[in-house]
Length: 297
Length: 252
Image (cartoon, rainbow over all chains, first blue to last red; front, side, top):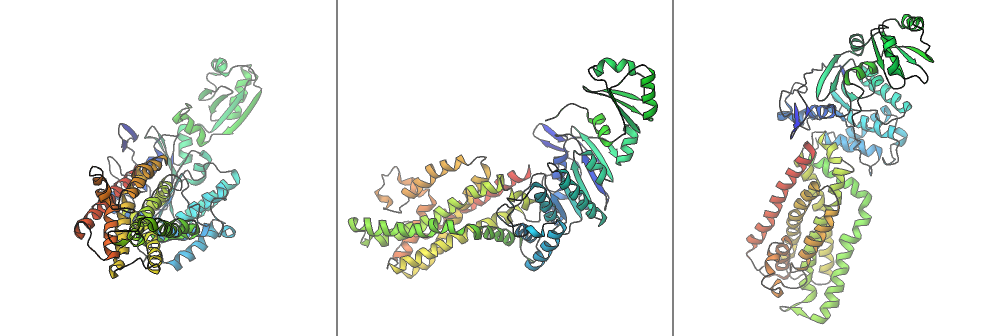
């Protein structure tokens, strides 16, 4: 539980993450993901409730816990006037590594982040993807037991995201516990063994990506477009096709176990969609179903 | 194992390595030029104060005011920037470095800067024959205490404000008046009785009087312990405030 004055950012959540697990917090902006992450990072204290990180109480053992955490914050906080290598060695020193050990670790991590060629460059001119990779590499400097990633790939181009996913997947294979927040559903499906969907400071669903899709959505989704006809006017005619019909401004989604059968039924009813797409249900469908389509800024 | 405070100090020194050229002029060359032009130039007209030649009289004042200016100047934009733009304190917060480490590492760095400038200034002053007592050797200690007495509260202030325009107010209404009315260029006895308490509440005045007593070999106007205590109060209160300001800024 976390309150800021009258505002309740995190309104009683109950989760536990096992060692070696990759766990995700999903949710729209303002759902309470970052506040939760800050509490896990032992930076902000819960207003109420019990919190144990690596088996310890952050209120008592904050510094000890932080020594075993790797934190990749949402906003980059690299030192722009230091070189890429110096960013790593300086950070390593905060964890008490000797100068020699810090240099050795920096070389390893430069390799891991594919930044060896940029080692002597200052941080300022690096691309967004390189800065993120450096931030993640920096979070690994103390060989942490638990890695916290707050929206690790927000704002990156697809190439950079895929490279990062691959690096994060490697960390997962090394047995690191990963806790991440994201609002990219593909990212959650790629990386998370288990996740929770948060909305308004509460947990609205919990499970593996697959289990969530099975529980909150159907196997397939049919996307129908009807040219100039307004989807809202056609919903009545589609009643009973599939399990659920969701009219959007530009198209109609039909949630069904069998996409082809649903399309056949649409045609049988004399409707002539201008385009038809049958696809598998994704985590995004679950997310939108659970958190709604209302825009949160 | 390196202490986290030293790791923070190292970061600041590493950054300084890239910036030192710009600071040498303002913190070392400028005070020397200042004392030469005012001390020799103005001194030629005014003669001396209380039987001391003017150059020797203002050397301890400019010495302390150099420490004062570094203490104030270093702790404004850099501290605000490290919170707002670089977010380096937020980065440290995610490590075993705690708030006292951040403050100690930072203030040690500022004190090193103060000491380098003070020692260079002393050497130049000695070359001009402006030091008249072996007690001059304690002035670096006085300047370190003064440096802490201003650096700690100014760091706290910089950690509290949201915008750098507040620094213009700090310079205009605190720093410049303190320098003008703290006995650097003329004895505070010249000030009207009403204004004189302003000097007494300025940490700079206490340091100026201690330095002057040391370089000229006399006694300061108040007991030494009283001057030192005033500086110590500023330092301790500043540290307490800075710790609170950092905690507030980093925790919620």
